[in-house]
Image (cartoon, rainbow, N blue to C red; front, side):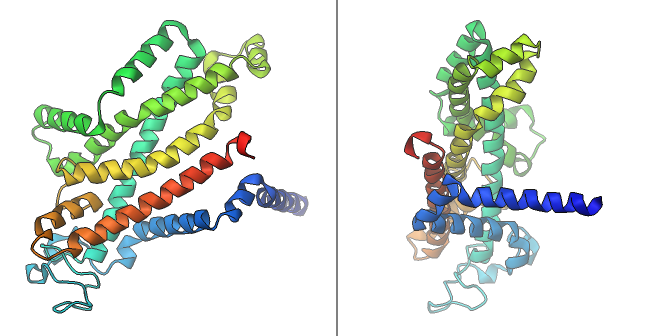
Length: 316
């Protein structure tokens, strides 16, 4: 009996894999070499960031292990460079390659967490707004309109000042991550709410929703079990594109000094540190983190654009 169940599971897994290979999405993915390269670069970037403690030769967060005498060391191929620091060091003596690896973890953590929080808030409000309509719909949409007038930078400054005023005992190093996540989440939720609301307005008039109402299912169950799965396609596309935007926003805020502190360098913080030394000849502190930021943002955007086209039934 157990052998029969195991054979059945293997067949189901094989059928699922065969369906995935034969799908239109996989076909469109293999047709574009640019998208395949972008997906590989994105995966490699995530892998390096995830395993940074293993791959990096130095922990840039451990200030006790840094040597100021190694500060501002040029890349290994330049005069005065060292093979120990392949692409040079910053003013604190941090190995720049290791700092980029660790900084990428912060940038990705902020990006993923803020996108998740924004999607959770936006989807919830979009479902409620589209399903119930009336005054609730008007209220949520007017709040969304007001939200669009506030840029993420202004929200971050407001939240950072509020946290510092209400919780003076909390160190900025401890709250900087969540301030960034909250600021970016409050900037991005409107896109999810508007998209989900538009889809819900269409889906709630379909027969399967009317049938669910007739058998007495509660609105909460109908929204989660029946409506939500049918509106997740556009949300997935928005989340992919917003991940790149969130990484850029984090880098921008850190560059302006409102994001991650210098003791925990993200890509934006490294670029800000390098700006102070750019005109004195230490170009590598800014250039290499900037290139790393540009590559990951471009790769994620390319994957997001492909996903948008692949999930659009009008383009199939």
